[in-house]
Image (cartoon, rainbow, N blue to C red):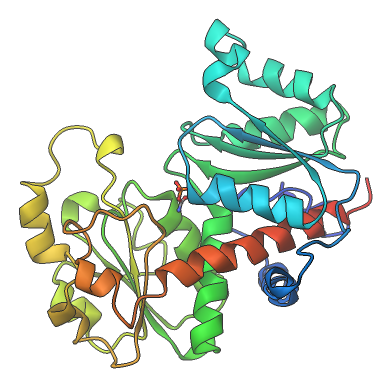
Amino acid sequence: MARNPQLNRHGELQHLLTTEGLPRDVITRILDTAEPFTVVAEREVKKLPLLRGKSVFNLFFENSTRTRTTFEIAAKRLSADVINLNISTSSTNKGETLLDTVDNLAAMQADMFVVRHASSGAPYLIAQHLEATGRDHIHVINAGDGRHAHPTQGLLDMYTIRHYKRDFTQLSVAVVGDILHSRVARSQIHALTTLGVPDLRAIAPKTLLPADIDRLGCRVFHDMAEGLRGVDVVMMLRLQNERMQGSLLPSPQEYFKFFGLTQEKLALAKPDAIVLHPGPMNRGVEIDSAVADGRQAVILPQVTFGIAVRMAVMAMLGSVEA
Ligand code: CP
């Protein structure tokens, strides 16, 4: 059997590239490790020494508000030195290749790369390159690659669900919206499946579903009312216009009418259902403001939990022997 490229020969997390194939015990360990980190923010000194002396490089080749900032906060809370490479003013603009950039930053004694890139597979390429060139002491975390994966988003979503709902094996969960272009949806679906969610639903128009949706273990619904009936968790997705080629939808207004989450549609879910959204939100397109700001939304707690989950991932990687 091929070795999972994220795990070292001892089965420890070496890189975090995807939730696909990530063993259940590793996911659970990340969520458990994150638990005590949530209270670090309540201390007068919001710091732990777990990454003291380590250098974390944030390489965001695509825009980000939540992921980049919470990785920076998480690394600083673990006492790491954090370097945010400003891609727009870097030598990437002079034609330097991704791997040349990585080699130069590795020569500055990097310990961890946090990578967001528009190309699916870019973080894999970096991890493979580091291993092939004998620098496997440097860890790579995928902070979102193309439409492929966004594992820390998937994991912080799992943390949020576990916080409010406890037992994954008792849940009905609906993932709603632009699943075709969403790296978040893939990371969520793989993690939810591994954690044993028995009723996983994908709600989307036919044009926004990937061809392999059945293989992913979801029940597919094209009618939102039908799909939301009785669910415990509603995971909304952003409509990703920047990744759409050609016209996949009549108009944002039409999309909102059929697939936008309103109070009326949410009332079909269980009364204590929670609503997640990874952000950034398109209010009035995939979600109504009354829901986004309503009592069932856990969208801002997701962001806060994201710090603890990213601390957990970095602390686990930082504890691996080279
Ligand atoms: N959820 C998420 O990835 O948001 P950002 O693009 O702001 O990082």
